[in-house]
Image (cartoon, rainbow, N blue to C red):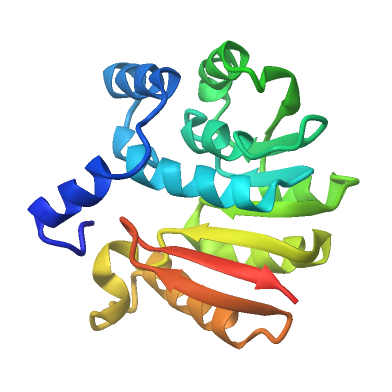
Length: 213
């Protein structure tokens, strides 16, 4: 989604940091070989993720929803030298694709892949995190929040993607549309939970930044 006129959006992109060449390669190969390449974060949102991570300079990052690893590499740019990024995805067919690009980057030995259902994996992670990125199946967003909130350090950041859900959040709700209902419930939770403060950014399909108090 673009919330700005096309020319103004292009100006914003052109006056932001350039996309690293490795991520350009990853994007090309994703579009050539992977179904639903539109799921990529993309160059502008990727630079936003990178900037937030660099500002936070996290020791540990958790990502829910790896896809082809684009956002993982953007977030890894802000890691401390001895930091770790743990990323969870259910699609085993993408595992080797992700690993190839992780190992091409300078962060390969800091990125750890977890294959399976995040609801099962999160409780087994014996770590706390400074930055958590949620970009997985929308019906479980609320469940993910409840699983990760106690693993987020005070002052830690949750970044949530697709919170405007193609603009459907302001349209009449179809009772059969479970994903839109889940996003609406999640957005309300982020707004009302007293443990965090939240701001919604109208970037691409909507990006929420929440800080744990």
